[in-house]
Length: 216
Ligand SMILES: Nc1ncnc2c1ncn2[C@@H]1O[C@H](COP(=O)(O)OP(=O)(O)OP(=O)(O)O)[C@@H](O)[C@H]1O
Image (cartoon, rainbow, N blue to C red; front, side, top):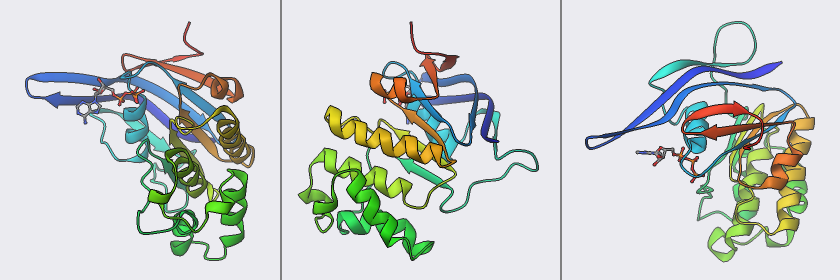
């Protein structure tokens, strides 16, 4: 089943007289049950693509379809999960409450799952700390756990292992791969070559264009 189909996506940013074409005709399919790694140099357009896919940015051209068949639709709360580069943890909530936050609006009985995820990413012992009392890497692991807590249909993760040592990066990749095996579509932008090897498919972004396979 196809979860995301994007065709001919174009996104331009305007800075004064300068125009940057961040996406220059991107075609993309991500299927339920697969982990796809999006790789490419800094500035090539990876974060912009994730921002368009999650609806934060509106494309200048192209079409985006979520789900297979029927009318195009948006994803509801709990179906789309995002791990932004800036993490987006709520500073006034403990790490555990940040992970539980999505469950307050849906699946209020998901606290067991939240506990399992905190343990899986190695921060069960930090559950009661606030984000400012945790390292950046620990905060990032909480952000990934939060994204996975509702078993979303689509996970978009921007550099989810950027602040991790190898062991913790592997724990996060295990959690993301398990999520894909559970039926979610998982798209991660990453510079981590181990993530490329864990992915079902690798797509390379260069100058706003997408190519199949790892960079040469
Ligand atoms: N809001 C914005 N306004 C102007 N230009 C932008 C904006 N966001 C991104 N860009 C530009 O669009 C291009 C693509 O940026 P993007 O953040 O998507 O790259 P990236 O591949 O995710 O990079 P990185 O690996 O460093 O995160 C870059 O040239 C960037 O400077």
